[in-house]
Structures are given as structure tokens and as C-alpha cells.
Image 1 (tube, one colour):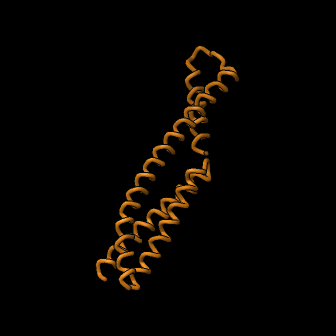
Image 2: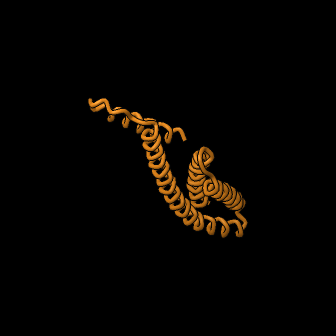
Image 3: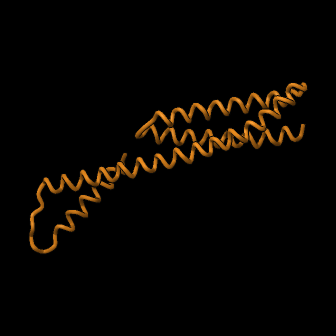
Length: 144
């Protein structure tokens, strides 16, 4: 978490700069250590809040896509049962994309640190791919 380190170093630098108020008061190593720890704690809390907010946003987006997908899946199943091969293929593609998103959601929930950031990027890409698959399916099912 490079952000954490930068924030901590900035806090220590600000603390040290603030200590030079002209009366030549010396700063002890213990004071610097305490301020650095406070900065690290604050940065860690901030990072956890950001992760929590992003998880909530992703979960909401995921649920909306699943709701949208349920409707398309039902339509594709109905048309596939009626013998429309394109609908069967569309259904298969939607199921594949949904499975990828579900896998990425689980990976994000289990990840932390750098792995969490990588999982977040992969999930966002999978959600985007699913959204595109839904748009394509909607167009294909409307035309058949």
C-alpha cells in the first residue's frame, strides 16, 4: 500500500515542520514514532473505508446486472426451447459471463492489499463484459 506510506511520510514531515516554531524545541524519536503511527492508523482506516465503499458499489452493480440478466435468460431459454439455435447460443454466452463475474466477486471478497486491487480491476472488467453481453443478447433476442 504505497498510498499508506506516502501519507505517513507526509504526516511525519508536516509534524517535523510544525515543530520548528522558533524556540529550538527538540523533537524526540518517540514523538516522531508516535505521529508516524497515528498517520499510519489514519491511512489504514481511510483505505478500509474506501474498500468498503467500493465493495458496496460493486455489489449493487452486480445485483442490478443479475436482475437484468434473469429477464434476458428467461427470454433466451424460452426461444431456445422453441428451437431457435441463436437463442441457445446467446443463453450459453450469458451463463459464461455470469459465471466469470461470480468468480471475480468471490476473489474480491477474499483478497486484501495488492491482491485486492488486482481483483477489483478484474471484477470491473468482468462486469463491463457482462454488461456488453447483456446488450448484445437483448439485441439478438429482439431480432429473432
